[in-house]
Length: 179
Image (cartoon, rainbow, N blue to C red):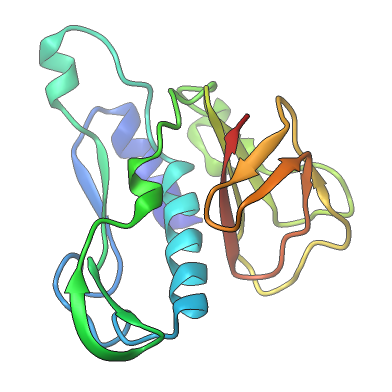
């Protein structure tokens, strides 16, 4: 939470920062050779957490050049953790999420996105024009599914459609597109 709050602060101040995972663009044995399911879980957790901090794009050309929070992660993948690694752009990074619906969180803190339902402690939800990012960063899973507004949503990674709630496990994240 403190790292995401630091990125929120940087976005508010229009500073450029980069959130790094693994070796941040270089081939990383910590990520490249993970089995596909583990790599996807890790990448979704990091990407959804990162999305809690991005700012609203806009303003004049000068403001748009200050890119704010960026994400850096290993672009190298293998087939289920074996064989030669290949570099590629992870598909969710190309999705059109639209602008964040809350450009700057109240109190300038990630807790503005925390779900208040007692069954979902530790779950954070941020809505975008075309998507939603959901994160459960701690070790405890939510007791019940988290209801999502503005849906239904689809998960292009799994092919699941008609999503109106998600059951979040500990150390997990999801990025879903509005359909």
